[in-house]
Length: 253
Length: 260
Image (cartoon, rainbow over all chains, first blue to last red):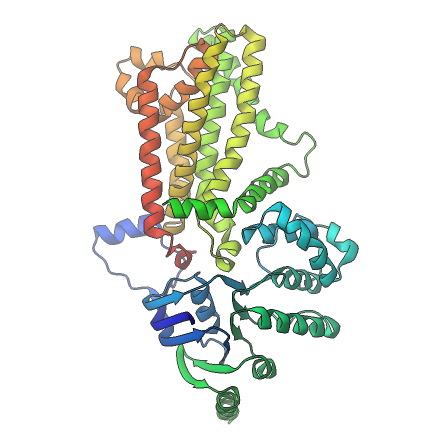
């Protein structure tokens, strides 16, 4: 059963060169019929065809700026496609930008609750989850403190603990494994494996090629907003790494 | 539409918590806490009473509650419009991360401002009761539809201002200027009779804010249910604002993230 379907999807950003337009500018341009094209057009994604069936774990690799995060956000429903059709059959759980969305003046405990509420939980259902999340984060007494005073490592542990305390249907993951110290990384990896095995479908973006190879059964190589190759992990990864080495060599020369 | 409201209801604990946090953070480091939001209209009332009561020849026992009720309601409108302008920027990190119906952010603004309004209203009632008592207690029931209409208008204004300010960032400044002008064009400091005597009755009749203020002031000050005209204008304004908010959300919600 198909859970995700992207048909010829594209995503375009129009970014103004000098910040945002003001009402005055907008009216003046209208009055004097000036066509000030003072903006960048960024083609983030182009001609993306993707189909993910139940049980599939798809990895996405590519250089920086290829459009991987844009693709995930489009799948999550944060960006509407500029062209083409996006169809998702299931509940999306996303793990990206997990350090965002903290209420800085609230304590760790409260932030655990807030994240839960954003996902539609009630105080009753969140209460059961609080203790396991707290234990996973290993923050102990620090959870009583306002999050504003946490170190970046603590924030990332808490964010990861909260974000992964879900029962995912369709899981979208963007670079969340770079979290915490070595010991925590090992725990985090185990947790991710658990999540991935429980989810009905997973789309996994990472620069950690090893994780992609281990966790995914299909890999897509994204470059400059287009799908360059898709197929068996080893083949696609080999091609991608070869290309990356070539590019690095060219730049050094 | 119903599906949308259901989605908003689904994350109700999230926006309720945001409202609670807003209230808590606002007064975190102050001693009298919520008292600050009351001090402003009370102080303004005291000053304006001192200055204008004599000028307008009004009796203090009538003028002071009139002024306070007007100021508390006006402050609600101002808060909802100014904070509404910022509501999507303030919530940007949530919007970028987690798709949720965008209406929850203006809703949070309107609720926060609404709570301040209700507290202010309570103070007005206590104040009026101490100063002159209530001639007609049952008339206070008239406050309920007033509060309801104000809430609908508040949410709608927050939605409209929020979206417009994301699209055109100088809207906030324009709004502030507009509100300043409206403050003097609306019978807040002076009674509506002053405008009517000078042949400016239409100015009062078409000003929806004047009608809303009357909805609050009539039951409290005069012990009467508000006039049918005030109710009509107020309801029409609320309906119009709500329609505008729904239209704006319907048109811009999906693309709003591209403008943030």
